[in-house]
Image 1: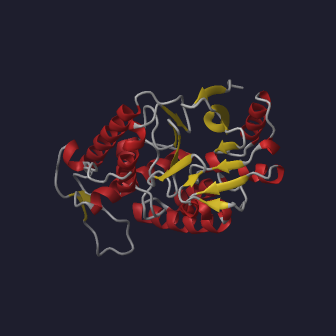
Image 2 (image 1 turned 45 degrees about the horizontal axis):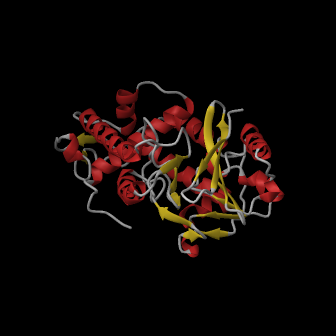
Image 3 (image 1 turned 30 degrees about the vertical axis):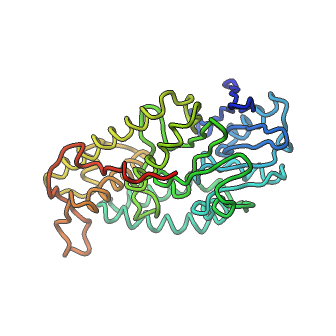
Length: 343
């Protein structure tokens, strides 16, 4: 097991980073914030055996038990961050919280999965994915979430005024509808909003409302003042972020480059599936679904902003084909978000 790390806030409060193997060979972090009167767990891992064992063992090494937890706060509704609460709920009286827009995912999981599966199937058909491949992708999509069952949460963040004691929360949709970042004194818990070296996964808003490139860009700018005010930024994966404002700028630049690549891919009419193959090459299994979702998010953004057009609107039974409507530079194709600043 990887070592637990300890950090301190400005006032000396202890924060522990618990490394969890949330999926085979894929690691994430849960964070324990010890406020003397409360022991707050931020995120709970996937709930798969290695993740659940790592969480309990990490707490035990620090001298804590699951029963000692008073709050479990979820940054967002992706299963590598919330799946662990299914196993924790019977073993702790800790109050569980999540943002309203991810409540259905956690507390009405089966219905939410059924709804999103239908939307995903529609997207894949319009993207030009053949029927057998669609069936396989939907099966994989559902299987990766089938081990979790609905768990009732105790409160939602907006109903709490986006704060819990000294913790403040900021809603930053895009990577996930109900994603929040949390700030305690000079420490920011950023979830999956910023990652060293790559851009968090995107999917089109046609599948999941409050996702997509435009929401994500807005949210990066909403985060900017919080990043400026934070000495330490702890993410859901990888080491603490050094120079987080630089990471934010690099993320915007990567998005701009990718959007321009996508735009150039549609110089001749293409379906989303055809363009995905050209840009990403052959992919198998869940990886193929992920790159199709990414391409769908890019195409949605470019189409909505007039960079692409649909060339076969009358062919109702056929996949949609897109074509570049106008060319541009990286700075032109990326929505300038600096005017969307919040507290």
